Length: 392
Image (cartoon, rainbow, N blue to C red; front, top):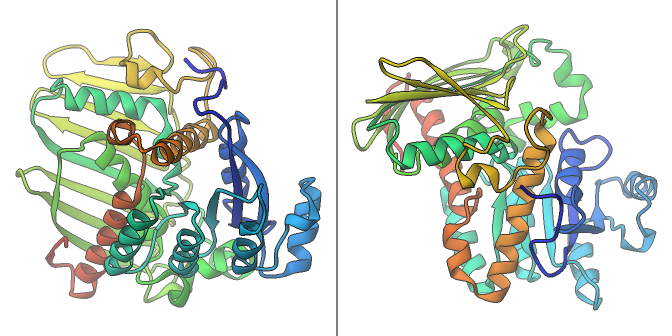
């Protein structure tokens, strides 16, 4: 169990691009990064394309006005001149800005934490991978739900063989908060999400399903996706050619199969993410409405409910435990756990500690590239009339 004590020698001086007053994710990033005050310290920001709005927001966060910048280019250049300049940066902008901002950050010698989906094209991901290796820097992706402790418990049970051979992976991220078409116009954070020039080839497949897809990869690290078949719809017609609902079938290299339902028009449902892993001996099921409970269902035996914070869980599930059993967690604990791992990864990279990096479980650049492959394969399948396509 951790109680906020430092895991690295000192916190990283941290900047943020985007994530300002109109952002839907900026507050989550700040809370996750600074929850323990031992991983990151918010030092500089380019919160908004409107510099006056950026300065007003930064001052309301009690930041030094001299460390608030009109754009990320200026921030990287000016911070590089300072002995106490930022060492890591968060890219919390609309999707179309991720690639250029990440590239510029790496060229400025900064570690990067980037919102999902990472970029539009796999080639962009591969280029960033080469640049990150050249600069000796870490690129992390904020699949924010993946820091829940019981997902680590699922991974431990899968990799130890408790479920037997994995046969089926059943995934869902489907809520109803996109039912109102007026929301696309009224919300600053929603406008760009339904603009193909800013999000690429997909809406909910990139905005939602990449979270759950990564979580399934983390839980089942040996399952390699081979093919997908995607059928997608725009029930709010103004979103076409983007989708607000999609069904995806999956085939894995070892013969396992899966499916994903992704939607923002699942009216009235507040329990948005479900993960069910079915093996030859037993199944596991988790959903984000009850993140502190994991259902373990061995064939021919009574179902067991495993609770977060209990001593019978694996060491991996207890490592990031913050509150103890009976004290219920929320999404910010998950974000905080992720940011803690991001800081450990950056520190290990700085020290050349490849052993720590090899054993650390967090959404890294490779997983971000996998997310790009996922989105593009789904879009290609749907555009071809819901046919099987190879994931490449």
